[in-house]
Amino acid sequence: MSSDAPVLKLYNTLTRAKEEFRPLDPANVRMYVCGPTVYDYAHIGNARPIIVFDVLFRLLRHLYGADHVTYVRNITDVDDKINARAAERGIAIRELTEGTNKIFQEDVKALGCLEPSVQPRATEHIAEMIALIEKMIAAGHAYAADGHVLFDVPSMPEYGRLSRRPLDEMIAGARVDVAPYKRGDMDFVLWKPSKESEPGWESPWGRGRPGWHLECSAMSWKHLGEVFDIHGGGIDLVFPHHENEIAQTRCAFGHETMANYWMHNGFLQVEGEKMSKSLGNFVTINELLHTENFGGRKWPGEVLRLAMLRTHYRQPIDFTVKALEEAEATLNRWRNTVRRADYVEQRAPVEFVNALCEDLNAHLAFSLMSSYAARANRVSPLVGVEPGGPYPSPVSDEEASNAAGELVACGKFLGIDLVARSDQQLSIVQLQLIDARLAARAAKNWAESDRIRDELAAMGVALKDNKDGTTTWEVKR
Image (cartoon, rainbow, N blue to C red; front, side, top):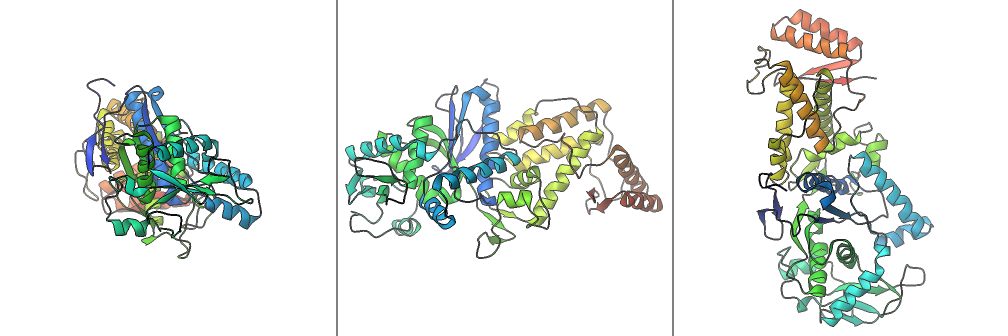
């Protein structure tokens, strides 16, 4: 990365501060993000970290080069929830995990996500897990008892540094299991015995299977090393999952840290309420893409992506039908702007990249995209528009073409194709009619404005005039 390149700053949960990102090795920037447990379809809350860290992956590739970034997102394919679901459905565990993972991969591709550099499976890293346990036992941080191996939490004085929770909150948050073989209440399982009907592997402590936390420590070690740059996931994983990952990895290798930057996206709720099956608002990505269960219609993946990115990744997000409609209206405006313009291909502007370098400031990035769209529509974004008032000052055709190209480049940078056709795009004739109607409204020729509205309605294009003087539309197919 050159000395005049944008400076990337990221909020680090470990330090509770926004810090300049300095990779351990600029020639091999390394990021690990917790992936799905493949026992059921991924819900829309699972989609948020997938999308957020896909954007970061794209940004890192832009800054350091695509060949110099390694992004690992794991697949958890051994877990008690998987065992229970397979038994419930009367199918083999492998059949369940293969089928569920296939759907997950299709879903995230529809959301516009790049494939990670590596997608390791937990079941393919049992040897690494056993090796980690042996290192922890040898260092005095783990012990075997009654067919189990447990991490000895009091042996690590800095345990709790990431979550910064009081002991009583950590005990409650960890849902501590009471067992006679445990030395301390907070001690957590690294290895546990398996019944004949459960998946199991031979180990020095008998046939068994790993604890959930151990899996991520083993896979990150195998593919990124003992210490790496960025570890990401949802805020709900800070404790106990990420806290326990840190404990395992640090104590196995004796380092001061596991990853230098810990990033977490905020919670997601649906229509103002916490998502849960009991409330009937549990929504999967697959449902949104393929059924009409949310808002009475199917939603394109790029609309889901845009709606997710409009809120800063660290803030809570309320996932609503209205938010999806607004995202779709924005997407359609941008696409029709590009279609109307004779755009010239551009690179994403430096100011846009700089916005993302400020801890993925998507709000500023989208504001810039709106300004490029305004210029592409041959109006200056610097002049205010009063409802029903005159057009702002015009820009040249060359400026408009360049701005449309910048808009396309920014969309591509974010994983949103603004050149693709969609059911909500308009024909050139329809776009010309909307332009003519805007001119009529600016001239306060209400009769002509209404006539054009009726003509468009007959074509299946329903217009909506907004308070800010803009017009959106919906195409009735």
